[in-house]
Length: 462
Ligand code: ZN
Image 1 (tube, rainbow, N blue to C red):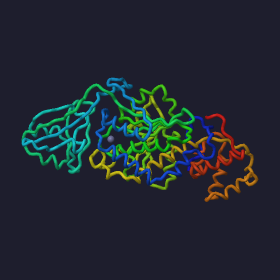
Image 2 (cartoon, rainbow, N blue to C red):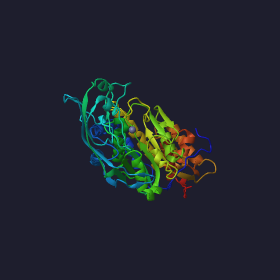
Image 3 (cartoon, rainbow, N blue to C red):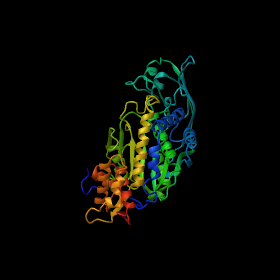
Image 4 (cartoon, protein in one colour):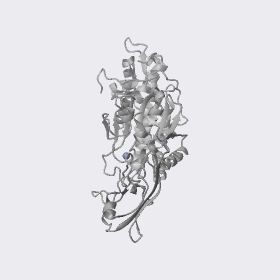
């Protein structure tokens, strides 16, 4: 339980309760078929898996096009050389084919077998060279001899191949023909946005990175999760506007932030989602604020999930939360993953494949984010209109009403907690945390008390 002074900052219009007792999101959560949603997210990952994504290029465009067949998406093209804070949008990279052939003309490695075989952003090459020289451009993982590593060379113009260590050790001395049929030219950085409008302009931003080729947990799982979240929210009556951003890591979030700098004050909460499908426990990384409302909301949902989970403090390393949290931006954006980056052996290798991720893990990640949104949607501050002594609840029908709940004592307690701490400074989430009860119980109690006139909206947000 939290101490008496613990409270999460509540942002925005805390008096928006036009939906009354049951926001659409809560109903959607109850209707959600967990098994079905996991299967659908997994199917999207299967569809996107073969595409060769990178920071830029046609693989990203095709990925966004396929996401766009499921949710409304605006595709933005930012030209090479565009300034994005301290960065510049890089050249665009596209690849058609790549292979290595031995002296006899046998193909010993082909991009067509796996797009991980080519170091991302490899410059075009067409050469014949001896094995010793070729080896300077070959990368393998001796500790996992059947896995192909994932490597990129975004910011220095070079080329390379990744292969299994078993393949590497089978190469015999001789002259090899090396072809990488790629372009690295002025073009565009492509990102997608899906905006689900709410009753207010205040926004929740969900960011996921799109720059990895055939890798599943990192980060087709994040792409599938964000797509499915947008599908789940579409058509609901929402307090917040939800903006889903599909963009490459680091340069993508920096570019998006620089392109949207004038509107960032609308962003009240945010979440980076990634690594959402592996069997590891859910892991929340707090925003740089530490106790922003999003931090308290996710933590609350995880604590009441009954499932193993971890909560980490912010650090300026990891995914795009570090751009959203940079001191000049300073948005309350946390990050939800299952296993964090770099903590599982399959990370950035061909073993991060469709067998590594599971539909039921994707479902659990989806349910966690939707429950978090339900907290954000329903969180507010109230004022007790009858604060002198406990008001007589039976006279107002609140005891009778409680007969309808499955868990009467908990709901009775929730009424008393909501009355006791609705003095205008604590939010319903703060009261849930103090009481040890779940947010939904406190919110339901507050709605009943408001309907009976015992609680009123706090007129001004703090
Ligand atoms: Zn990665």
